[in-house]
Length: 93
Image (tube, rainbow, N blue to C red; front, side, top):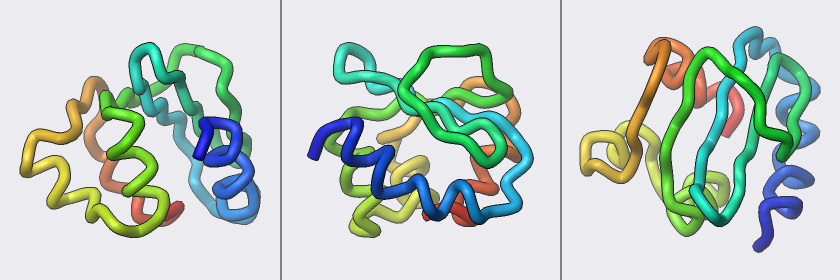
């Protein structure tokens, strides 16, 4: 699955959500995914919260195979910025 495929998979959920913050998944050289309110893109921009995660773990997260809380507790995510926004992630996945 590519980053564009993840964007397409999440697009409907993001557009129909009441998510009102900005969040970035930073997968390093594998790309960036930004959710800003009801829009989603792969364009890098300033956000309220950045989650550092491997591309493989992001794929597992989107597929529902990886619990966000468990992943954070296992050190698979790093969070920079407003952690309460990361907690809202369950609205989208």
